[in-house]
Amino acid sequence: MKTTRVIFRILLAASVVLLAWLCIDSVVTPIRFEETREIRETAVINNLVHIRTAEAEYKLAKGHYTADADSLILFLRTSPKKELLKEGALTDKQLENGMTEQKAAKIIKDAKQKAQARLKTDNDSILYAYIWANDRDIKANGLQGFRRDTIYKNMINTLYKGEFTAENVEQIILIPYSDNERYELEVNNNYTTSQGIRIPIMEARAPFKTYLHDLDKQELVNLIDKEEKLEHYPGLRFGSIEAPNNNAGNWE
Image (tube, rainbow, N blue to C red; front, side):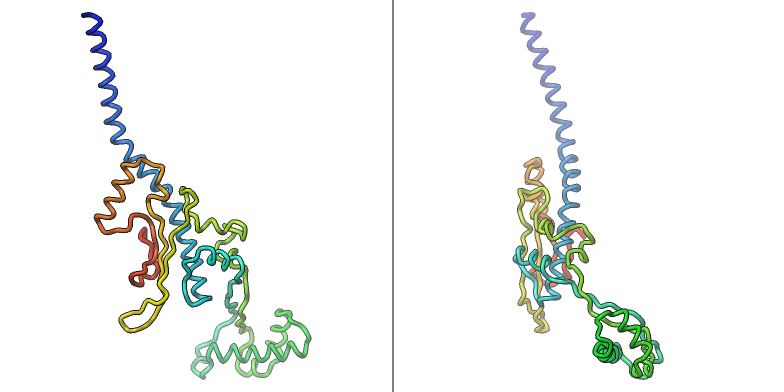
């Protein structure tokens, strides 16, 4: 009888401990899930922003977006970034007299070509110093110090400021905390507006199940179910292939 009471008390104590643990776990698990989710989504969003930047450059160069991640990475590795180098500005008086950026750039270009032939050099510092001091058209139009040149820079260095190199830039298409899964890229390069204007649109996606796959399964199911009931995408994404949205992210 005494042994039975001892066993009963042990089982009762164990049950109390178990219930206490279950209560604590029911509170802690969702909190831990959300804290981990927030940390991971910061990294996922960072790559989505990098992809958005790359796709914008790709569209600028090609006239359309790409859903091929390998083509996007090849573009980053092999294409130069064009930039306009600007020095000097037209005055209000010059603008009133009919001078435009295009006209001024042509005067500078013509003068530079003549100087190259005369001086036998491609050194821009020498050429500009010469034409600003000696060219009659430049002096007549008050364009001393005015310069407009297209220059070419390394695409990856320019876009990502040293964060990536040609060797590791493909990391931007891999979803952090996933099993090396890639972001889902989808494009519609033939979308037509109600005004009959054809414009390219795209979206990039990272489903919850890719970067939260190893967390509490029930919390993940609940999160996905909640977003789907609200008719939200169950994950992170930017853009839309349904209608233009300026490539906005659903986290913004």
